[in-house]
Image 1: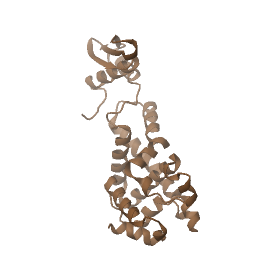
Image 2: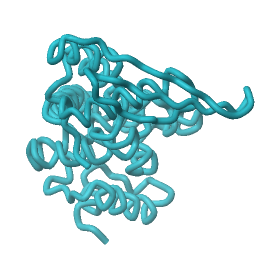
Image 3: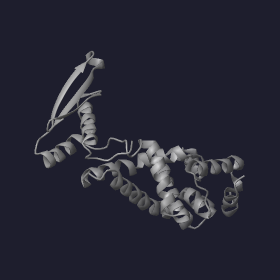
Image 4: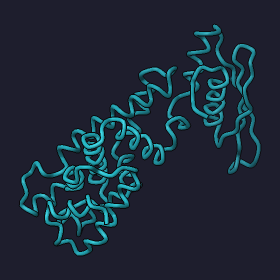
Length: 255
């Protein structure tokens, strides 16, 4: 059994839990899932302690995960901002802001919490337990923020960054391969800037109305890209615009 989980149990008297052995195993699984073992078990315990649990146990209010949630919120936003800044050097502030918002919103962070198994180790009061608190989006998202806040304090920015990028990448799709931007707008802006010409799109389709597939090509100052298919005209044009941006070297993405 992992020593840190046992120590966590001693710190907050978790002996009352019905399935203490399962809890310990889930702590080990959590740390395996994020690829990090906490040096300070108290930090991990704080990150897992919802205010309903702390209130029920009669512990000081600052022993809940709310302070770590506050810290983790800022750490996650910085990590995501840094990653997007590096991955998309040609993308302007407005699009980066919109992409970051999709990555740090509560629904995404709740999925991240589920992905690493936080739902199995969050400590909630019996009232929250009865009403399904472990599956509540706000509790899950807060626990993930708290976990990253604790990880930042225990292991530093690089470890926290590795975990955030890895976990959010699995939940949302790799940062480098995701399609959060209006690539048509980006292509038009850069095409006018670099060539003085507006891109020209050509769209065709095949199949019956209910299963129609669209194909789009785009010409950028005499260079043609595509065809690229999509489930809609808009999707096909966005995808071929992205292909053109990559082909022209105007955005940098890892293969």
